[in-house]
Length: 222
Image (cartoon, rainbow, N blue to C red; front, side):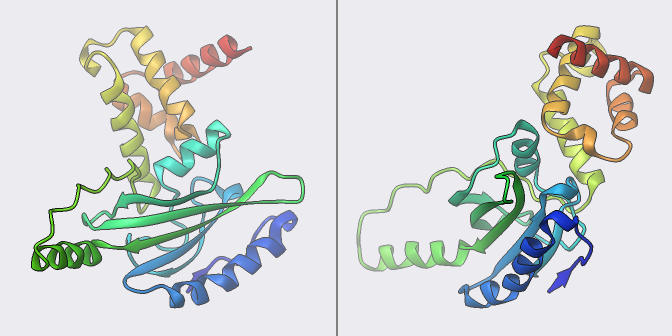
């Protein structure tokens, strides 16, 4: 297990306890799996402990786009047994447990990812050998992307925001670019290092324009 030892004093005991649980929990899981602890005060680079290797991430790597979005939106909730896909295309069964501090604020996320692709193949083989009807297709995997550094996370969030716009970048007017910035802000993009510069390059404008768009959005909220 890898771990980072420096945490905000407020949640030091909780985080230290979770770090001690990572290896024992991973050892109890059958098949390829990983257990991860996120310090939610360190977003986006929030992974402080990990045991196992299913998504190729290590300590110091960022949260997924889904976890970051939920944190920024104030919608962090425990989610058990949802399906995702690993960076190599493996089918995963995932659980995210949100742990809160004494004041009820989200402090950490304990995440479990299990590679169930072999189990699904065995199930299909057993069904075929038994001559039973083909089972219904598994539900679609959640749209959650496991990234390994902030550059990859930034590129992902930018691609998602630009793809959601009604026109390509070369045809965008100011109102389109403001909406892209709104989309990015809502998903925690501007917590990333050099975020304004990355957005400016993607939207073909200046960094100061990005700051102006953010100020405009702040004024709208007020």
